[in-house]
Amino acid sequence: KKPNLLISECLCGVHCRYDGKNNRIDELECIQSLYNIIPICPEILGGLSTPRPPAERVGQLVINNIGVDVTKEFVRGALRTLTIAQDNNCHRALLKAKSPSCGCGEIYDGTFSGILTTGNGVTTDLLLENHIEVFTEKNIDSLIPKKSDD
Ligand code: SF4
Image 1 (tube, rainbow, N blue to C red):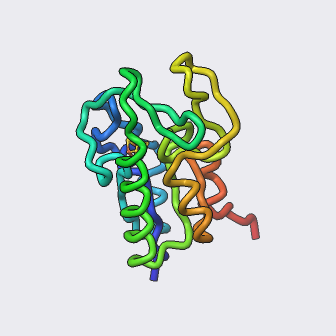
Image 2 (cartoon, rainbow, N blue to C red):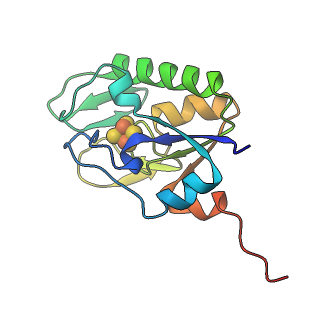
């Protein structure tokens, strides 16, 4: 039986990004051959709509580019995502790099100028705290076993 894998919905081709676009990955079929995918979009689960103003983490808050504090929606989306992960026994997640919800290791720095800083998205932080391993499309190879020559 294939293990379940939590995955950012935008990586599956769903138009749930803030700008109404998606980030479909070329490896989707390969990932689906190895895992049962459980797609989630934390920002939609948190009650935000698409399209929406882009938001960035500013310390413990999340603020959008018109100055509205959307921390509550981001936290609600993270909690709902964690519940879905736990209900589906997901030990691993493949999330969208750099996002204020889904990023892992580096995110935008809160100045809306395209500058990255060290950090995780709100959902990623919560998943990691709950011992769910988080990958992004940048290190997707770690989720795909290498073919051996023998
Ligand atoms: Fe993709 Fe995550 Fe942003 Fe939703 S919250 S659009 S899944 S990066």
